[in-house]
Image (cartoon, rainbow, N blue to C red):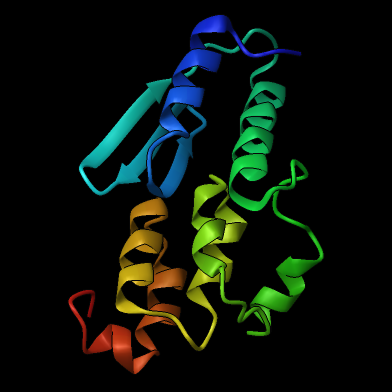
Length: 144
């Protein structure tokens, strides 16, 4: 499966900007990106099954953000839930358009108020919010 020519162009143009976070609305096939200038929106036009097309979009995002087209590694999900994902580049996980990647940003002990804001923009999950509010920097910051 390949991108539609319109989607390929729009996604490549979007990736030239400094992205802060990405979320994908699977129901409407729309990609939203948070930038310094605000929110950008790209309507996707699947050329085949929607699930496969969205996986292709996530692979492109992963290749750009992490240098790996495989997406969010499944084995890291367990580490995330146990609070063991404390890498220096957790902000890159918010560029994948993946719910589980957003969870991994909410759990590390070195979470900043800015990362909490971006994670909240990606996923308005009550579980993530409670987990982030445990961190003093978040509860005392603008997100708290």
